[in-house]
Amino acid sequence: MPAPSLVPPATAARARTALVAVDLQVDFLPGGRLAVPGGHEVVPLANAVARHFPNVVLTQDWHPPGHISFASSHLGKAPFDEIDLPYGRQILWPDHCVQDSEGARLSAALDIPYAQLIIRKGHHRTIDSYSTFYEADRTTPTGLSGYLRDRGVDTVYLLGLATDFCVSWSAVDAARHGFTTYVIEDACRALDVDGSLAKAYADMAAGGVRRVRLADVIA
Ligand code: VGL
Ligand code: ZN
Image 1: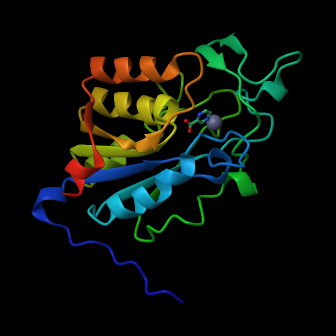
Image 2: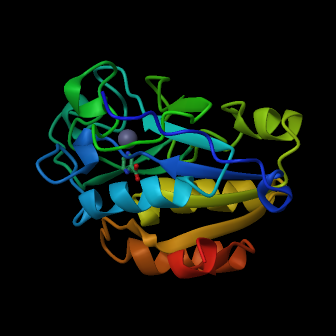
């Protein structure tokens, strides 16, 4: 057995800070059902960054079979088509991250055993949830902001997959709910569907999310 990776000391500087590592799951890595180009490159970066954070939250896209975001749930629709739903516009995806499937598992190369919370999202069949704070209706909470506040956290750093969906929606919600919010831009990879990456960076800038680079965070 390799030596266990120990939780880093709660330095005063990071005691009120949490790292949120978004959706580092098999289906989002090369070979997965909704692979993000270069997604596998983020896993070792996440392991390295996490060594500097005593509070780490992992997120997991976690859909029931027949989820509303799956193209296969809509007659005549193909992946990457869009439809209007009661809560807004929805891009339709290939089936991915089905609850308890191999593809929904966190990457086996992820090495953050002291992470204290895994937030599973997108588990309601009729609502998607890119954000790890609020579902796509923007009103159903996942509980993450309450958890972080109870733990005295006021600052959130995010990395992971995909920059333009789950990372950016999570970051915008974190900032909106009063957390000082940073996205570690070179520790994210994007799907970039139809201009979605540029839009995500515009939304994050408008929402007050700060962009940082790995070297600034782990210096
Ligand atoms: C994601 C599309 C669908 C993500 C999740 O993790 O960014 N993207 N479900
Ligand atoms: Zn999803």
